[in-house]
Image (cartoon, rainbow, N blue to C red; front, side):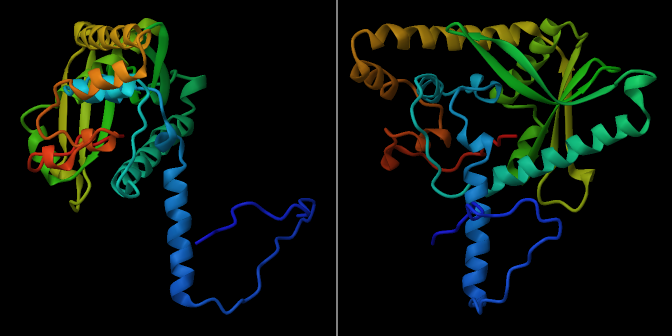
Length: 278
């Protein structure tokens, strides 16, 4: 099904009153299919879905194969439209608005100074000479703390009560490192696991620990070792790079491995609690 997303070339933007389309007798089922197609097109073409460069949310992955594949620029594909990550993105956007509006209403920028920074961009470090940027979901300057929202299902929520995954923990400390490098006084990191399917925030899990710069630096050092190896192998040829990545260890039951071209279904184990993204 083809949907036209661009207005006609002769569209008159000077018209003050809006134009409304006429009834066309479109079949209701077809109309709903077009609405779905529009939604899926938007999800697949939002900036997050099109991101190619590795970001802070991926640097700490325990899967050597996925880390190297991402650093090498391998294409990754979704089996279906990523609806659950889109829900997370939508909630992130709503939460950002809440905190921005709070600061605007109390005129913080002209009085006490901003306490909350929403989706602040920060450079967390370099990998093979390239700056790595990310957006911190929330920075609480009064507490000296970063907050990372995770919109998750029951499996991840239950696991969170035992502490964060390696990738989530590294992400949190990478953001804190970036903010500290900018001159902010960040002393704590936190992750707010918000229930995707519960009726209230009573089931949410709130995790925090003191900022440990070494966690971020170790994650960056590991990524740099991989990146340097990839650069060396490219002097031999792309086949050498691809072969090395394919033979790297894979984290048990890693869901991300199946997004890359060398994935073989028969090599999969059973279920794995998803590494949910922001």
